[in-house]
Amino acid sequence: MKLPDSKALFFSLSLLAFACNNRSEDSSTSDSDTTEVKVMIPAQTCYVGSIGRDSIFLKVERFPHVVTGTLEYKNDEKDSSSGTIDGTMKGDTLLADYTFTSEGVQSVAQVIFLLQGGTTIEGHGEMEEKDEKMVFKSLDKISFDKSVILNKTECHH
Image (cartoon, rainbow, N blue to C red; front, side, top):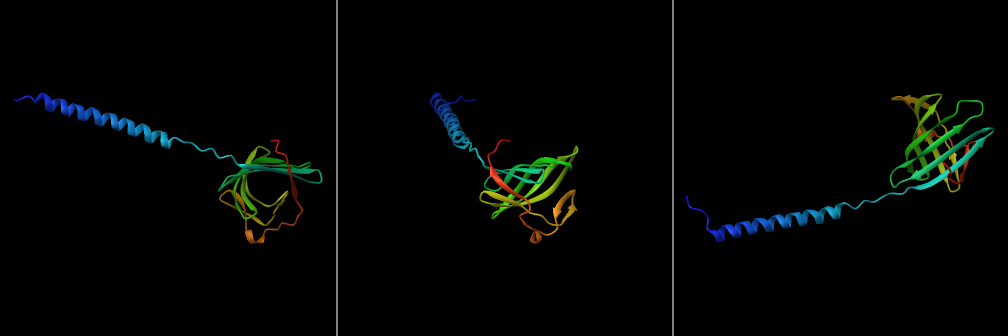
């Protein structure tokens, strides 16, 4: 069996070392290009309103395609509720799922608000249960009758 020529062996090892060095440089360059992280800070607005001795607090955090936040109903003589909202904006209308706890029981119901500058109006409509969630029967029949108006306030929650 004939051993490889020393020049051929040196040349082969040099090519292999060169290829390995280039590969690691390429991967480190591409890693640094793809590790940039962008943090989205949502636009945050808070609203408060009252009806008699009952009060409502709404915090809306707007991202480009989603709206999240919190919603609290503090009722004087009825059960209060508090939870999170997760929804979308269509024009100036927020339609969201309200996941809340009342008397130790967790539930989900749709809520709708008309956001107009410094105020927001809660919408009401006939609801039905679908897939263990209360939803509006028809979004075309929502009433924004100004019976529940919330005013913009500082966010303290």
